[in-house]
Structure formats: C-alpha cells, structure tokens
Image 1 (tube, rainbow, N blue to C red):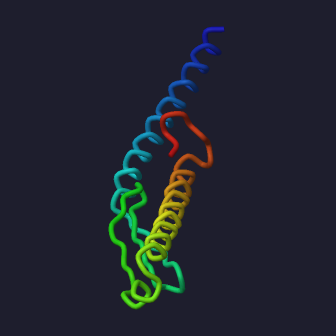
Image 2 (cartoon, rainbow, N blue to C red; image 1 turned 180 degrees about the vertical axis):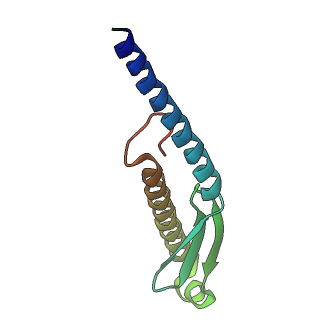
Length: 112
C-alpha cells in the first residue's frame, strides 16, 4: 500500500509541475501577444485597421477619396466595421496561440 500511495503522490506532483510550466508559458504568450499586430481592411481596402492581439487599436487609415465621396457617417460606419473585424481576427489569433500551449484544454484562469 505504501508504494501505491507514494506513486499517486508522484503522479500528482508531476501534474502540478506540468500545470506550473503551462501557466508560465501562458503568461509568456500573453506578454508576447500584447505587441503582436493584425490588420484588416474594409470597403475594398478603403479602410485599414491595425490592432494588437490583446485588443488595443494601433492605427486606423481612411482613404481620403472614400471620405470625400461617402461622407462622415458612412466613413465612421466603415471604420467601426473594420475595427470590429480586426478585433475578431486578433481574438482568434490569440485563442489559437493559447490552444497551442494548452493543447485545446479550457483551463479556468489560464485560457484566454
């Protein structure tokens, strides 16, 4: 019996070490994703939004001709849609990276 209990503790200890390694990798990845950028375009490349994978908007570009032709309201609608698209892409990119670390496991406090 003593061997069996010791074996279980060894398994539990290894699981804890693996969890700690995974947590360190997740924290490192979160730091890396703060600076990773993704971009999307909208309205036939008339609008471009660049965001980070942690959800910060870095830049928005608007074709001046589009603004002149379509006006403020249409331009703002296009900017909103393009930024939302960029944020969705950033979220998917970050989730994909996190799943690579966790092997697809959803771990409370670690995932996403």
